Length: 320
Image 1 (cartoon, rainbow, N blue to C red):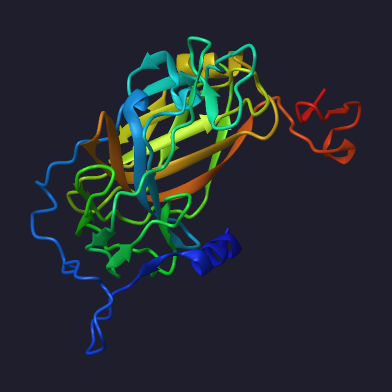
Image 2 (cartoon, rainbow, N blue to C red):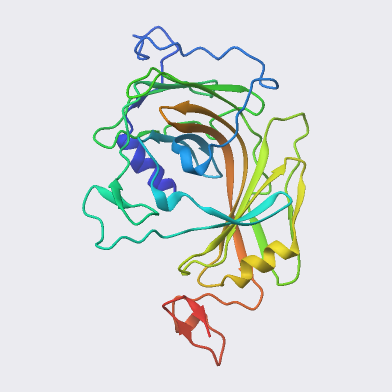
């Protein structure tokens, strides 16, 4: 992961403004810390999936911090997940696979009604600045993808409780201003979750010691090779503990268990704004990957991974 971040940095089209006496590199953008109260600034939350044309993220983890984002002119249909079950703070999200016959050609994608539509294209939204971080960042889009990214940041890139502001100068869409609040580092630095049929999944993390704006997002996927896998998503109050109901976990398992389960725990703030007929959100987060295992399931990539008497089904990376 660290190597990946370093490689991205070589291509990052961004500048960190100099705070000394050298020539200004901010292109006339105000890079001073934003004004406002981090405890009262409005935060709109995530965009609905069916209108989420884009997103920007300031993410920190145990290895590095990075910024990336883009705004397109539509939504790729396959990314619009269907809610299959909801209980308490959690829901199971199902991926649907549109089918088109004949298949769609270059530059198009299949919609849910069986027709081919133009593949959403990222747009130039002007200069994007993010202030309130340890280093203010000013970014231009990288052509021809019109993506924005930057990786040469202190880690974590933000201070807990500090107001963060993202601004675009405008281009394909009008200028937008979005806000976030620096979140506290999640500890411990590793997370192990055992999923057992008939049992609730208990989650714990270090609760903040001061009043915060953050929430905690958790996700689990136990079917890496299914045709229509379900993914567990939960959004909890950031108070240090939560429970995923046994009924939700059983529904997740009943959809299939294959391959190597995955999960993450994420402390975050999210804001959103309208762009054209769509929506863009801005997330500030600290993320930990979770080591997820399912009782009675042994994933594999070869014969040596399976217990005596079992063989590795490589198609679904499962010992049988």
